Structure formats: structure tokens, C-alpha cells
Amino acid sequence: MTIEEFANSVNSAKEDKGIDHPKHYNADGRMECIREMEIMFGQSDVDTFCKLNAYKYFYRAGTKEGEAKEKDLAKAQWYLNYALGFRQY
Image (cartoon, rainbow, N blue to C red; front, side, top):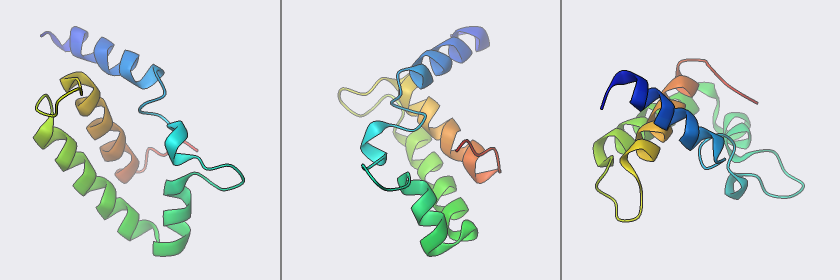
């Protein structure tokens, strides 16, 4: 896979809303889960959580039944970006 193909697969995975702000992390009448985590536990702990979650998705990429490798890699990138301060609210 070329870098261009990877970038395209990441972008298409993000567009399906399974990556950026998925519905299952947005309960009616509440903030998005990660925002509530920041308030409850602080940014430092959430950043650590995101780094660990990114590692998990990189680690398992392509091995979980029913999950595309590209989607796991896109999730990993999302969490890593979030931990590095590229937050999208």
C-alpha cells in the first residue's frame, strides 16, 4: 500500500463517522464522552488514555474480526492526534 492509498483509506474511514465523533460516544443531553473525561479526570490523564488507546489500535490493526486494518489505523491516528493537542470539538 502506498502512502497515498493509506491516506485515502484513513480519510474515508474518518468520513464514515466511526472515527470522528461517533454516535455511540455522544449521549443525548450530554457532552461527548471524551470531553466529560477531560472535565472529570483532567487533560493529562485523558492524553495518557489517548496515547494508550492509539497504541492498542496500532497493535491490533487488521487482526480483529470484522474490523478493517485501515479503520483501526485511522482510530489510532485520531487518538494520537488528540493526545498531541489536535483536538476537534
